[in-house]
Length: 311
Image (cartoon, rainbow, N blue to C red; front, side, top):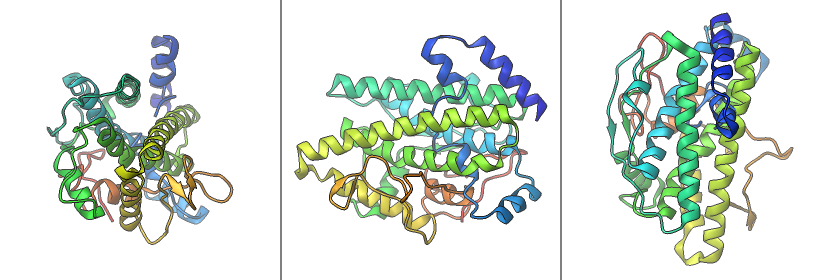
């Protein structure tokens, strides 16, 4: 994809500014959404079949963009009480509103700074992917970051409702829902990326998403260790179990405690992160819906304006 490669190189050369250069050239985090979300096929034959079905770098980047829209809107509202700029949400497919979201009253200056940094990273991801795609970028679909959390809480057995903006611990639990999904999505998509410049940028996106996920998991584990009566580890485990229940028969997802010990890095026996494919990712963000639902009430936008499918 020569055009994408040229756009990527132009974007990199015009955004050189200390650490922001790293995030805005794609060396930043997904998640939910994210390149890895198109991947996860379990064999070379399946990978070849994916290519035959027309999975291109443009498809992968646009799928990632949908997820980055979700993450950016959540973090920006929680950290700064604002969303993406109007200039950063237009494109192919129906443009939707954002339902819910508000600023969190952070008690800790440290957690506030974490939130602000992640929000800026996710906003940079949106800008970066849109710049690379140019006229082939999809618009922001309808995003629900209010009712979706209530539905997730009910499905996970946490309670009838959950407000991620009520306090900083709830905010981190809300972030936990997204960040691990983004890491596994980028990991899964890597095998389909054909352009090496795009692959390098995707590796950067994956790395930053992993930093974000680790940051969230570490703080949640620490808070749980300081005050086990809050039940943070149990809440996180219920969310992990919910993700496992909707993304297929495999038991892959992990909470922040495993075998009675800290589990900051969810990985397999070889200490490798696992992958999710597009359908698995959509099933999670749709909260089990087949074609839409959950965080994307009308589905995600695909190239050509088609709606994304769930399981």
